[in-house]
Length: 249
Length: 223
Image (cartoon, rainbow over all chains, first blue to last red; front, top):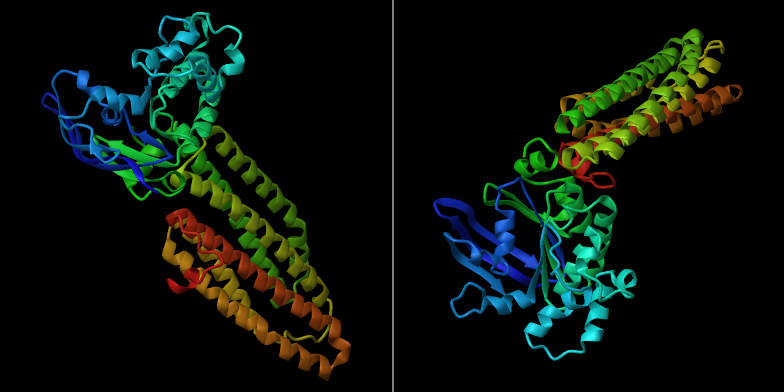
């Protein structure tokens, strides 16, 4: 199994705060990797490194490497917008553009001057995001009229429209009800066939249900990384066991 | 929630230990009824099985409740799974103890019959295995659990040694054939108790270190 994303001695500082310590992590191609850990452990910071979303934070200092497609994405010659085309992101709260459902999907490809059949792109993206049947008759309605769960699936469809290799999900279900959460989890299972997914979640059961591999972070350090079933039945580190069983964190 | 889960797990463990104590008592009484030809004691065991069955159902219900409400993981999950399996094994041991008591009830009514094999040693070893397996659960002692797995061989050996003895007894005195068959049944039941006790020890090993040693040589090689 090849690694699609690799961090090498990754260190991240927010001003004087050392948020991520010397992390070496391999994200496998075509797998779902869950990143878990208590609040402030650096999991979202790591996730945002994978498509350089941290670039917008003032005072951040990043050392080490994040390798994607055999290139260090933090190399000065790398164009971050090119990285973000290949590594899409879905956020904690659904954030559709205040535009129609149709325009949410085609916006990215259009501003990137991609020569595509947009009708087809909208249909395939929405189908892949398991939203097509619910919205096919109202593509020109505002995306903001959709329910929270539908909006989040629209955001996934929007990410898919750019044909990414990797989709990053930062607590994608934390603002959703259980029914909408299950739909997103089922969707992740289907997307696994075509994309690599990295998900940050606070929900232990969700990490156990959806992911193939799990990375546990504590105070900016990668404590344990491995196969999800092993991690949730027989973790090797006591800190991991204490965290996933709710004894701390 | 972790504290609630811990309270529930402690409660579950105590329930299982109550069942373990009842089963241990039943096994001790059943082998004693054979050794002392005590018909009244044998009858007592036949009547006590209902209590064991009731405890087994209670433990299972409690374990299922914990799985449904708390979705335990890691060592907590292993503990609930091990307890569910040990629960079944203890109930089966209770049934085997009843089988022994049934045979004992018959034998106790026969005159001038001697136990034709080293029943005392076999019974003592099996009772000790059962006690040790439950102790390994209480003390979270993986070495003790491995000792139980190892001891099963000795009980098997005694059981196997019975066949030629019984054959020769039947040849000597064909009129005693039914009694000898009942001794064979007693030995077989004691040997099965030792097997279930080994299962318990293997589940304790899984609970402690996550290793499934069942159907492997590992349960024996660690001793």
